[in-house]
Amino acid sequence: MCSTASMGHRLNRVAVMGGTHGNELSGVYLVKHWLQDPSELQRRTFTVTPFLANPKATKRCMRYISQDLNRSFTKAFLLSKGTKDDLYEVSRAQEINQLFGPRGSADAFDFIFDLHNTTSNMAACLISDSEKNVFTMHMCHYIQKHTQTPCPIYLYGLPGQENYSLMSVAKNSLGLELGPQPHGVLRADVSAHMRALLACGLDFIDLFNQGTSFPAFDIVAYKLIESVHFPRSPDGEFLGIVHPQLQDKDFLPLKPGEPIFQLLSGEEIFYEGDVPIYPAFINEAAYYEKGVAFLKLEKRTFSIPPLETPAASTP
Image 1 (cartoon, rainbow, N blue to C red):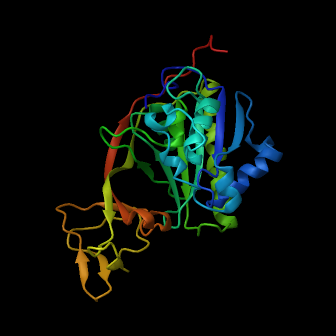
Image 2 (cartoon, rainbow, N blue to C red):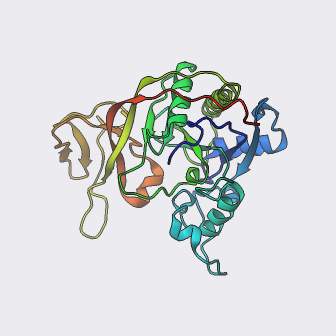
Image 3 (tube, rainbow, N blue to C red):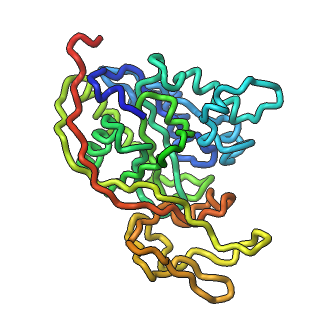
């Protein structure tokens, strides 16, 4: 996604999404609160719209009803002709695309924050599709400088892969992934941390709109390589679990020869790569349905150019 804001355009419309996954309750309950009292979201130079993305799944405290809403924003789904037999999340994705997009159009919202929880020991993670979104990378840099705890950046886009997430509807976006928090559970510390990170991101947009200069910088981010699956039997049964030496080591280096799985038979499986990688979403509960044990990331340093300030004539 190319950042429109990096070319000097002021941001006027921002959305805050909670409940994209209906059992990730920090975003769900914060958005419910803000729908009643949005005052803490508002800033002087733009408007903020809180929105509950998947109300049916939220009501049932489920990740989704028919399919993952956050994987339902492909062109095929968004352009499909609606019928009474449509999957709920496909219809909801089309509705969200019309309300906050359409994706890729001049009418799309300027920014979307998407609020998520993970069961993995990831603390606070900032999520973007690509380091090429200059505006979002500047926001990540600002958040990292103005928070007391680490906030690693996870870049999920793969070469040639269509962006499938809810965030792709807007011109710019950032996902906030916080944990560890069990699905269907609220933790005060996690919710407070999410609230603080969001406030920092909103402050950044306000400063940008007011003409603040943001110079070039180098930044570390973690780029997706591939998913690593649990070992399975020919009939699909799990043969092992995440090794205790890997558990809870999100964003820490996994070196060649170190264990990754402990089989139920007692055997161990070791990482056979040639260079260290950086796992994330280790033993994430929501990924069990896909058989994914963790994501394999590479640690990269990117040079981000300066952020052009909005033109003075922009309203």
